[in-house]
Length: 326
Image 1 (cartoon, rainbow, N blue to C red):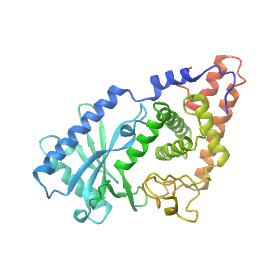
Image 2 (cartoon, rainbow, N blue to C red):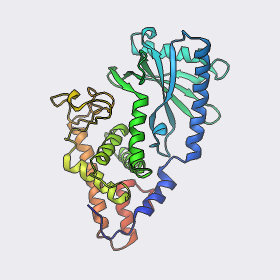
Image 3 (cartoon, rainbow, N blue to C red):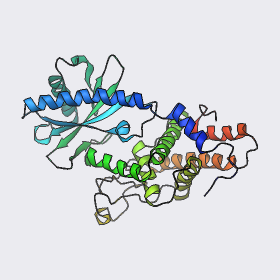
Image 4 (cartoon, one colour):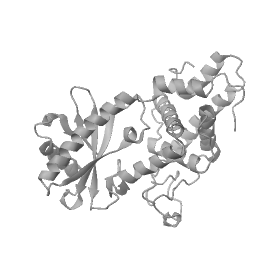
């Protein structure tokens, strides 16, 4: 599928991404540097206290994956916790982990900067404003760093692996250097724009990454031309209405997936065949995503009939918001 007679092309979208969408490399590097300070200090504390209940810290989230937007204001890390040492309830676990982090970072960080939240512990750097969300993973020594994450909203224990997730993303980035991750960021920016207009709209970044991975793996979308890639993404959402099961066989066999449908939208964690990451999305939320994608697809299609660049800019603003100026 192609977009004819474009007034705004691939290079224009790439320039917009550099100006507005993408997290600048120096900023990302600075955030990683600050997290490395935390990780190194924790590693040192663990080495001196072999029975310490926290085992390791791993980079996680969009900055680690290279899919972060310029608007990101926090950095996600996972701290692996000895499962046998961890309290049973979520509230107790978070409070307990905050106490362990204060112990590990004594003298480095003011204890008031380490604050327990609902599902994670937040560490705020006063000088730079960087916020690190520390998520506990209950760990039993698996060599691939599989452990149990506490699901937001339900408190369910979900088997996952930060390391394997990053490997999964790295494989797609290697298969399509630069362009695949950029299209992910474009779609995430579109989703962010939708959320600013509709408080009921939701579309998890992880789901967007998995859909883009599926489109790359199946060859359904060409990612090295951004207008065409975005058209392909929105066409897929509209055409399938997100009723097509999405799953991957990097780390498990297809036969391990549920035999019956387990949700309105089915997008399975590439590490855990029993975890449908879209399990909480109901029909109304599915419809919102499809209708928003249809509006974006209509706008991109209309670009082919634009007679001026100004008209083409207006069409792209439907997708990206008013910050897009061509």
